[in-house]
Image (cartoon, rainbow, N blue to C red):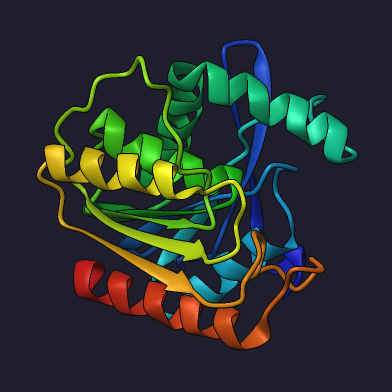
Length: 231
């Protein structure tokens, strides 16, 4: 899918200009899905996800976390930018909250909103649950699942689907154990699906890690989860 089928939405965080993308809802109020992109910012995978979600009857908004002038051009700059928000999770939560506001303004039904995120965006989806934002569910797709050990586990009132690559070296058994404890401590409605023989970015066709069969399964699992929550 091309970005020509998405409408640009300028918004801001103070003086920082942000540029999101929204699907066309033809003026109707629809269930909404916020899409949080991977560490290089808005990419083709996020755009494609938004367009596919529109086909399912949702309005989708792709968040701009970094803003104009801060878009990474390579892995090193992506790691630096993502690192800023990983270490300052309140700033990440704030940028996500601004994007949620834009999704609502675009026509999303306030009581029918979910969040999906890829990679760095998958970490953001977890931050949505931790922040207690008013969304029904989150999907973390090969997200970074670790949380700073100094942060206290709190209530998690959002339904949570974690889609994890079996060979993602960033998700050690210890990291997964801590996440499961966090979700249990928070009394969350959660599930983890692990995809065999998959490395980190297994859902991205542009990645050498891409696994077409498992990527399609993960997408169907995402759609099933969203259907349960939003339709």
